[in-house]
Amino acid sequence: MIRVRFAPSPTGIPHIGNTRTALYNFLFARHHGGKLVLRIEDTDRERLVPESLPKILEILKLIGITWDEGPYIQSKRLAIYQKLAHQLVDKGKAYYCFCSKERLAGLRGQGYDQHCLKLTPPAVVGLMAKKTSHVIRLRVPDQGVTGWQDLIQSRIEFKNELIDDQVLLKSDGYPTYHLAVVCDDHLMKISHILRGVEWISSTPKHLLLYQAFGWPIPQIGHFPVILGPDKAKLSKRHGAKSVLDYLSEGYLPDALLTFMVYLGWSYKDNSKLLSMDKLIKIFGLEKIQTGNPIFDIQKLDYFNAKLIRQLALPKLIQLIKPFLKIKISSSLINQILPLIQERLVKLTEINELTEYFVTQPKIDAAAILKESKLTVKETIEYLEQVVKTVTNVVDWSVASLEAKLHELQAKLGLKPRPAFMTIRLAVTGRSATPPLFDVLYILGKTTVIKRLTYAQKALK
RNA sequence: GGCCCCAUCGUCUAGCGGUCAGGACAUCAGGUUUUCAUCCUGAAAACCAGGGUUCGAUUCCCUGUGGGGUCACCA
Image (tube, rainbow, N blue to C red; front, side):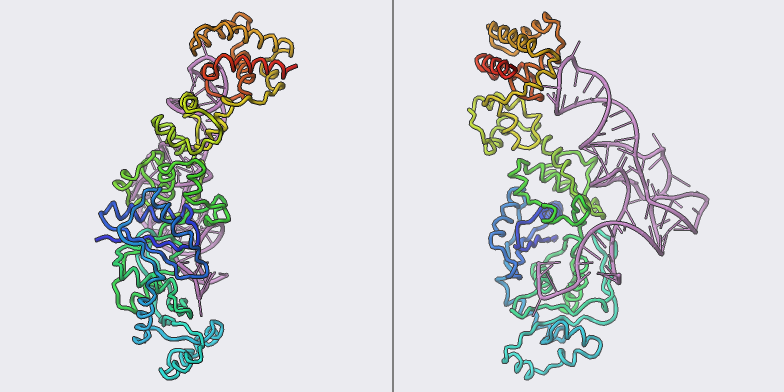
């Protein structure tokens, strides 16, 4: 039975890299019909950020990651770790250490265990009675190597002599990560440990712990880490954002999902949007890359824009409403949305792409003149002609607007581009909009005339 | 710096001894006869270097270089 776990530390809101680790574990479990265990590693009470737990759960939920057990909370399992740590002391695999780290380093290799390992019980009791702070350390062998065949990387080995005697139980009675993770993975029957490469150098310490306990060793694999554009590990320093941040910026969950999964993993040409169901079917560790991928926001934009284009209109309307900041009626937004759907990269862009439909835009006289290729007087006259033409449009439709204005353009001997760009600029204040006649149609005759008149004044 | 991992277009990657080294994102050019966007077509763009092994290396081995990770009573 395959059992994997996602074990975040509640020291902040997980960024996209951490969430990807959860995703890969989830996909691996589901693909093989296994279980995902959620565990909260909160043994560092100094860095603990209480609000991060609900955020972690929210992110998993929004992205579509479900778990089968947990969340187990390590701080509520202290007795277990303490008991196991003392067990190791009894077995001679670990020892009480009353020495400072510096002193220990100085004594290393010179029989420091005379000070730490062989304290007889009365002596230990005596020191404890004096409230001398102490830790329990693992006795790491001085010789030999500890290694494993990594599921993703190659075989990895470390010389034991290079590994320090790890602290297992801190002086505050809390376990260190190393103790807690090994105990819990064993107790929770984790079959595959899948985490980021930043854990590689900790793995031999864990392996040694498994040996000390006499426990079977699970399979272990390390995912590449996501790097920032500067090729350093993605972190807050890069403004590494969480899924929550991206969602509020107008990215869609499935775009984020696709983007994350492709960072270090491949499927066909890496350009397809993938749903969670599809991913569960096709995901496998074999396609995980060994090199560290670089975070590229352009890919995210690509997936998001593509997904928005594929959305059915009612769904898009529903999704976009929370992002609307300008006052606009439902019927108007329903008319505009089909025109801007394929122009939307992020949902937040709805405001800037819609604004000129409800507000008189600023008019850039210089830009109009540049496009019209006419003098001020001629441009104003042309706009006047446009006003007359528009006024005379009886059946207000895209087709007749197009017909009449093309007629005018031909009659005046103007080229299409300057003729229509001048109108676009005069009415919308911008040079890039959906098709002009659709825009005019939605704006309505009154507003179009009003804006044309306004633009004429601005030109004077 | 020690230790460990990694190395194909700018980016994500396919490749698992013999390929014109393929695709996608981004970029550029052209087209869809008003802009932008979409869509279509095309272009430019990579095997880090040097040694081996082999009839033959992008692929296997070694060294170097480069990049990354890690060196806590943090995870």
